[in-house]
Length: 166
Image (tube, rainbow, N blue to C red; front, top):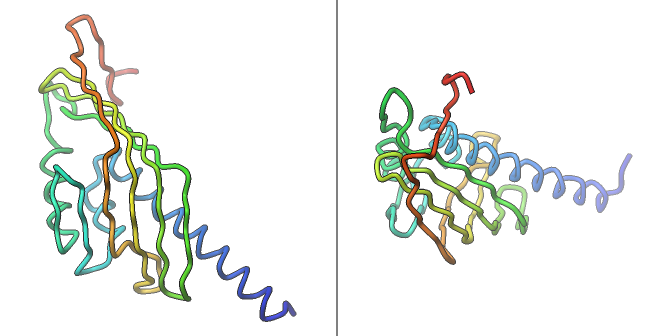
């Protein structure tokens, strides 16, 4: 039988891995245009969500509506806005059995076929997590942009989306 100290260390490492999996589900939901999956990453009510220019909300429902409005736009039979989120450098602190906090660096790329632009952005997520219904969820997700560059994509640029035979 593991010692109490070893059991606590294992529990902490398991919590960190579960939180990493949560953040990865969130990022995949963003890129897959999955509003339900996006919303499921947050607590049922009262999450603090602040994405700067995209908006600040005292519940994840508001950000989920913004996400749905932007992500689900269509043009020429495909998605109008294509995103690629890569979060790295997780710095997760487990405060107890049901609370934790974390910081992540985001590398983000977006192709906007409505504006014919490509944007590259980097910044930091500042998150808080709680266990709700037996699973880690985000109770706070704030993003602070460090820098961003937007450039035009020309008419000679070809964008292939899933289902296009790519």
